[in-house]
Image (cartoon, rainbow, N blue to C red; front, side):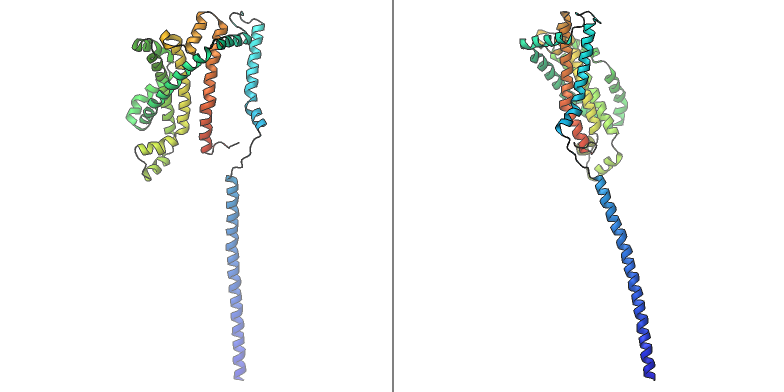
Length: 323
């Protein structure tokens, strides 16, 4: 009788333990399932975020790209030529004051056949490039000093802004007195016109750098010239590039102003002198041809040099999707 009771008690205990083990196992399984589900959800969320961050590159067909980029300028040029021809046809000005596009093209052809046209362009372009490079060499350290040294900024900053707004032609008489009728006069005018723009552009770029970048640079040991090379200039590159573009524009304008006034057989003939020769002969077709050449060179430098640089900088910072 006792044996039977003991067996029944043992069976009841085993059953209770089994139920308890089953309950614990179920709870553990439920807990594991609940843990697994959020992990799977987070993985899906991360995958979705990665998909959003991934830039899908779609190559634009060549014909579509030409239609989008080349067609609008062509249409604009065609409209200008049409309006110009209409003004010539209806004699808005006398024909000797406003020649037709055909007359200007004929003047350019005559200069080309003389073999002098490329010489005029090269003389001005070489002066402009050399003056611009010298302006970069002077304006870059000047801009860094003004941006980083507060007393220098307080003393020179307003002067740079004032020089930037000063017309370049105002420097020509002073430069002639200082350097005479020489290339020194031309380059002095170019430097005085371009350096303030380049320096101010770099100052603006440095001012836009987040302070976190500078602190991170100091943490990794970038100080002095290393900080300038690896932190300041890369971070300020968009503003600096804008200053360089403006500096080139001021260089080219200053050069034309100097060449218009500074004339000497020893200096050679640039586009500015070419323009002045047309004025002296009262040949409006010649004058407009010279203006057209000056415009073409300026636009060409912008499209061939600065526009690709700007696209490269924007693309490297994720601000321009490759197409």
